[in-house]
Image 1 (cartoon, rainbow, N blue to C red):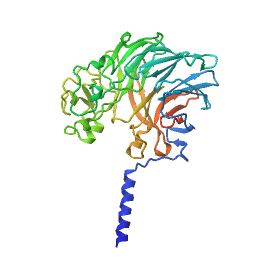
Image 2 (cartoon, helix red, strand yellow):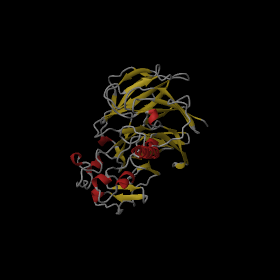
Image 3 (tube, rainbow, N blue to C red):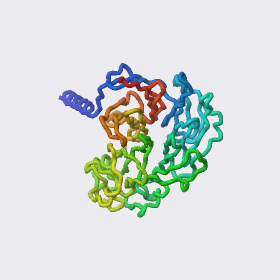
Image 4 (cartoon, helix red, strand yellow):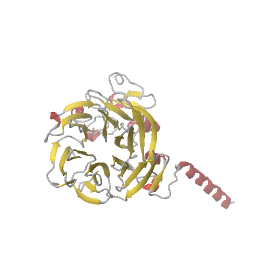
Length: 402
């Protein structure tokens, strides 16, 4: 009788585990090749280092190109690979996320700073690795930037250091209201416009281009318009359990794909986007109760698309008529539960002058077998899409079937 009870419990446990583990329909032969109806994705480098982020490519000639990858580390934070995906150089001691090549310059970020290195056009490599120029210095947090390759205008997002404009020693602690007005918006939580050809610029030398943006990790251009994904606020349930259930706390404050025009405001820290009612709500730090929406929807920019909160949209890339998104997942150790579906690269088909969104597809889906968190995307001269991983710095090469 006891053995029968034990057997029944064991079977029930297996069924419960089976229903809670996500089963993904793959037909790849091993853990280094992933194939679906849209693309074949192959592992081409097993790891250049932990916390790898964005990438840029310098094309030397028709036969050779170099891949510059930024790492969030304080030593050798730029890794250079050739077109066989072998490391040929490493330098820079400023942890960061962004890297962009414009003409013969390599731009990258570090704490409070944007650096510029000269690329030798004869070799495609950097000779002086010790004395970079500083197009921007002295800002309050890690600047996220993109440069218009034609006008040379540099658009710089300075993320907020807090969840809802509290002092840092009170951030994400219950009972503390947000600063009113939020004077931090003078220095963070917006996009500023600078001249990338100038050096030693400070924030007061830039033009405030757009405000109310809590945190972006990547910016892209599409037909002269600027786009990014706002990472929504967190801790609604943890700080206000009487107002928000746990599920609401995880889902309501959405990540938002937005078109960032000059003089637009997206409401942070006073408002957040409620995915249930598809509109902005007043933040509880400013008197909101999950229902009040006054002042939050009249003059504030609206998103092109919304996503469940905290899935980690780490990089954006536009190529042709597609907007690609690298989803890095939640900032926790990799687990194969429902969050597995968030570790992917997806894309919208896009059209029109102001990015009309079409069909939404998955380029590649990772799970725990692949030990990969997508963090960077770059389009290579051989017409492949390179995907950078932040766990160990793996590099995957994805080739579209059509």
